Length: 160
Image 1 (cartoon, rainbow, N blue to C red):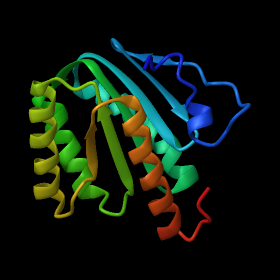
Image 2: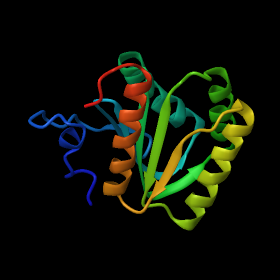
Image 3: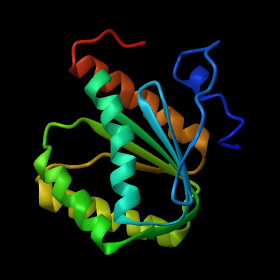
Image 4: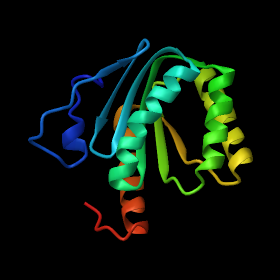
């Protein structure tokens, strides 16, 4: 499924709302759709790019008290060691952040790297970081919908 032509507004239950534009962060593209940060990776992720990504994440967190992250990894190229350390440190500093990441289009190298990063986050923070590596965008969005309902219930908000 082409991430540009897919209708994320409809997937988030916002049919009839125009899709937001993509922003460029390095070679990557990113946008906020309702309670989700959508990220199309193109090459490796640097610390600076990760910190810019975080600003999009904070927008959502302030509004919803949770963050869903959808990552298209078809062209992903890994993550710098500095960015990996930063992710682990930030997770430890923010233990109450409710987040879920769904990745799709992952090569075997990206699957292995993602698994290692998630394990490091768990070790540093002392809590699991829910990440699902999915076969395609549709299954990633299904997992996100389940976590959206879970987070909304935990926060006492009526699920949509």
